[in-house]
Length: 503
Image: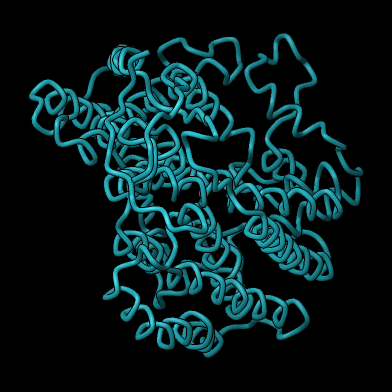
């Protein structure tokens, strides 16, 4: 079976077994020394300096239990993020998780607690906010516990030729099918919305064009979700696979056909996956996955994404919705402080968790119903009349909000269905899976990995970028593109026996 795979020289194997990829031995000495030099100022900046500057801002916030719990959560997430940045191993999924927690559930809610404003009003008692912050903190500890358990379980260290493992690689012929699917689906998407020019206007114009195309005319969002999903996801995945080939294979870089296909996919993604016509979180997925795929072994790029991501989220992200509406509907942010936008827009995760706790107190837990609606997102409402809506939408309607595009972070989704035990157990499993995936990704991009055709070397960066959407929620909104990505990966994935011998 032909696969996109080229043999690479294997690293020497010590007597005690295979060296685990991503270990400190593989880290350049210059970066190790630089990490030590940056350790103290980075930890002080994330854990001490930034929270102190926020605490000194003028505002009407009450310094009660919720305030101090939020400060503890911010410092805890800052310590864990600094650990991810300074680590000698590239932990993609864990690093993105702690970057999101530090920004969206640490710094931003802490600024809201100081200033005394929230992007979404809190309808319940103050005690529900205390419960929400405490549960977020417990969930973070559960995630860490799961990651710790994963690190205690060693990966298989048997020699590949003896273990007979069959790594997942991208089949060359099926990868060609993915490229054809990407151009066909994206081309259909472009034609449906009225041509390439529409993709450089605004998200409002794109939504209006999709609605006017007749897709989803039965009142269901399934048709429009699949149109957008197949119009954007196959193009991104094909670009990631070809980027992986060009980065790791000298023969591919010398092949005019491979370079031309990559250039065509790049132009296609500029049209359908640009930041003008797409949500900010999806463009973050595109950018992060492309950077991690193009620089799979670069410690500098890994650390830069995490460090600069904090700066971009605090300074640029609140202003990055310039193209959400057209010129008539756009309302620029008018603030006298860099922290004021954090308290007035976008970062509503903590307050929405508090509102959801109040909502659950009035109706009870769903016991898996919301999760079932996410898993069966493709079922039209005309077939399933009682199909659950997005958790954020349901809570927003209960609150009487006109705009119900509200966040429902992963903590909230688990809490609604399974309560505190399910939330703790779910986040522990997610931490375990993230840590195991990070370790397997380190092996996939090492010299002992399956080579340019490794599926995990592309999947892990994509999931790392999509983690922003999964953590922000609601899960039902994120299920469509995730399902399309899974179908595309099933299309190209092949399993082969690794017959190389370690030198």
